[in-house]
Amino acid sequence: MAYLILYVLIGLVLLVFIAFFFKFFSLWFRALLSGAHISMVRMIGMWIRRVKMKVIVDSRIMVTKAGMDLDSDQLETHYLAGGDVIRVSKALAAAFWKVRGIEALLAATRALLTRITSPPAR
Image 1 (cartoon, rainbow, N blue to C red):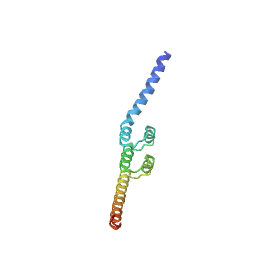
Image 2: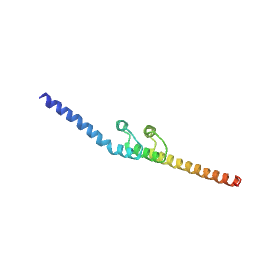
Image 3: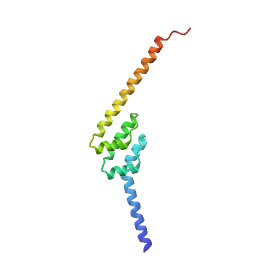
Image 4: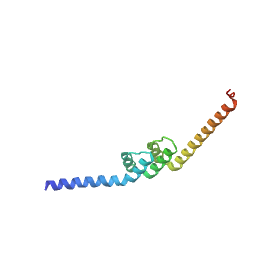
């Protein structure tokens, strides 16, 4: 009888673990494949704090793909403060790409000016 109770308790613990795992697995796996890793423990923390995990994961993927290194904790803090995380992430990504485009244009201009102003090789 004692073994039966033990097996039932182990089964219930495993069932709860599997339920939690599948609840967060799709978002965790999507973040992992996109290079914007968010740990499963952090996602459980977001669930406890009632933060929309999809918003945070999508925003983190967006800014990571733009080339920025923004922690999910910063995005979560902005969400909890009442900010629109998706709009801010889009604006950050767009601004980051514009700055990179301007830097590339300046580098090309410098290379062209160096080529024009340097004396020809003999």
